[in-house]
Length: 197
Image 1 (cartoon, rainbow, N blue to C red):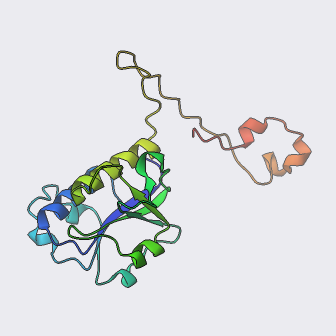
Image 2 (cartoon, rainbow, N blue to C red):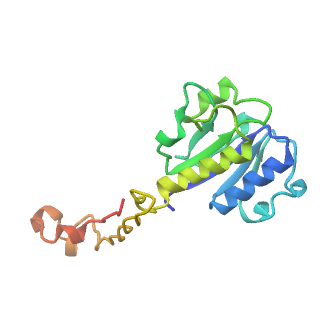
Image 3 (cartoon, helix red, strand yellow):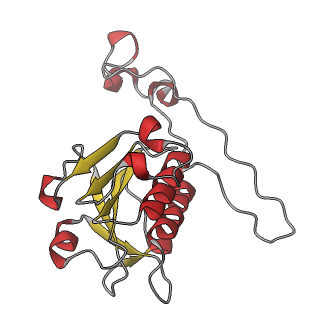
């Protein structure tokens, strides 16, 4: 999986939802989970059967203003609003921290204003926080998981995954210390890094 992500909740109060969300985050390979102004602790979450708090870094913040993310990590709010981008049309940033709203409310306009992106799952009404988080992380895995293309019909096999293309030696000075413009393109393919995506 390319990049990294974390997922967190704002003002969550239901232990079962938090446990389910963080267990799912652990399963999808989250780099961290976090809570903001939450009313529970990891010790009280019986639904987290994978013990994600022992396996995934867990950060607790008293307020949204205290939230601290790594440099270059985009904050992605998840909220059912008219202005939000539909999840199937969203390209997940390589480094992202997803923020889910509370069970009995929404992300505030002030929080939404500070998000780099706001996405919504195109449903008729709001979903359970843990369910919405699972859909979000699954969608991210489709974008950055390197699974290749889907089959075109339900009775056909998917096309084979593209093989990883390994780059050759790379040097800013060119081969053997000779600047690139003096090699006149000789074996340029070996002098470049080739990414498969």
